[in-house]
Image: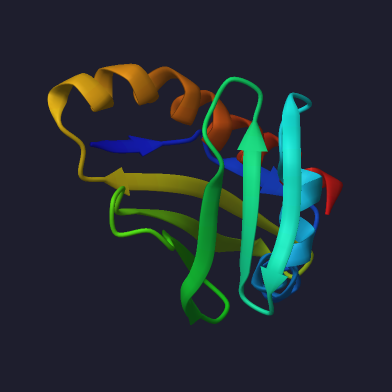
Length: 130
């Protein structure tokens, strides 16, 4: 299952945005209002939970400055990646788009598609809060 958010323009350079997203603590600011839990569990990982959804642990898998931050599930049971794609627009602005890639059976995909689509849209829109 592949999902992508809209592309959002942010008033930060690509490098500034990359640096902000490289620090997992900053993801708390991007989360939706219905967040039930957010806990940094290491320099490159955090757990978050949305109301009515199981908790998810994400870990930074790869950073490609200044264009990409790749987060992945820390659990092999539900393998997926969340990719922040950053493009430079000018010296002081950039755009970001989140891509979600996951391997789910048909039933699971049907259940998680809506909430995950909403989550990545919220992450993109809230990037302006960084």
